[in-house]
Amino acid sequence: MSKVLVIDDEQMVVSLVQQALSQEAFNVDTALAGEDGLRKFKGGNYDLVITDIRMPGTDGHQVVRSIRASERGTTPVIGISGTPWLLKDSAFDRVLPKPFHIQTLIDTARALVPGAN
Image (cartoon, rainbow, N blue to C red; front, top):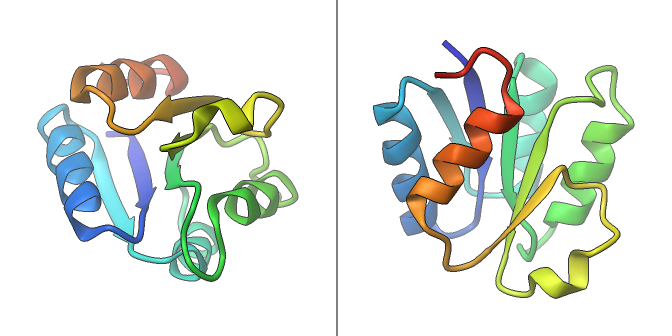
């Protein structure tokens, strides 16, 4: 089962993404802040990270830069943002505009995680 980390400061978004991916046989961990998400990433072994871009404290840009600089820097990262046009040349593997369709998120996760159903 593929392991996904979801980082967003909005509990509703985290719950929605966790529920949708869990129903598709992904094992989902969550964090409500960038700092907590990076701690979980460093202590875990994730196949995919999904992070909001704009969060207080450690934002999505800092999250993806930290992941890229780590030993597991090739871990796919999906950024979710209300301003996706500002992220054209970013380090994210994919950027999904908020609001996004859940099926689009599921399809993107499957495309980025080898072996995901």
